[in-house]
Amino acid sequence: MRTALFRSMAALLTAGGAVLLPAAAVAAPTPSPGATPVNRAGTSFLTATPITAGQPVRVDASIGDHLYWSFPATAGQVHEITATVTFPKGRGGASTWTVDVFDGLRRRQACTAGAQTPTVDAKASTVVLGCTLREVRPWAEPWSADPLPGTYVIRLSVIDLPEPDLGAPIDVDLLVGTIADRGASADDGELAAPLVPNTKAGTVLNGVPPVDAEADDESDPLADWLPDLGSRWVWTGIGGVLAAVAGVFGFAMTRRPRRR
Image 1 (cartoon, rainbow, N blue to C red):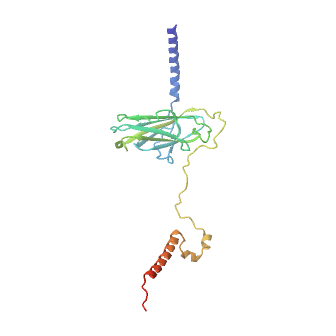
Image 2: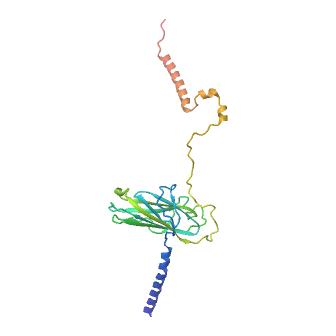
Image 3: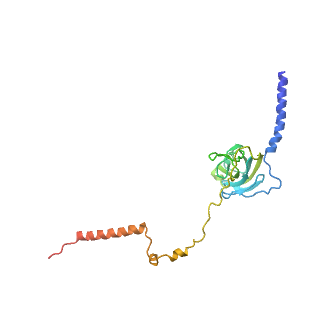
């Protein structure tokens, strides 16, 4: 009877594995049909190349470059990021790579699965990185780092490598997939606006600011010839007066009396 029980459990586990394997294969991110490939990457948060889920990325870069991409995310979505880096032959030693994800406030988001910081030896021709993010929430407390709707930034870089390998050419394949989309959850709250990085923090003034004509007319012509009274002019004047006093006093002390 014990043998029959073990056989039944084994059959159930085999059947369950056969059911779960197709589900895992379906959950893996795949490129969207007809999606336009992206062949460039940004070099900072402000120049991150925008992409969408299911849009394949393939770029040529160099070892040591920091590559940035951005993608939008809405509440209820779970994203998985996969990246493959192909190396040239004849590398000098092992290297460690990392893929980091930041939200609209540049807060680093944790990965629930995937090889986020793998290390490969000198003989490896490729390295595969991955990061599965947490489900995006419709709202969160201000002190928390929960993922919120908005624009997310991906950064792919190498953090440890032999110096002779710096600058060697590489090929990078990256894909962002939405493996789950539960829509609006039952959380009692909603974010007022998506967290989007501010890429236009200010403007650059190329010309000289215009002068107010009325203020120019009211100015005194005599005051235009006088220098502005600053600390330099004040201390220069005080120093001149003290020097003159010291000169007169020194002359009075050292002059010879007249003979009658």
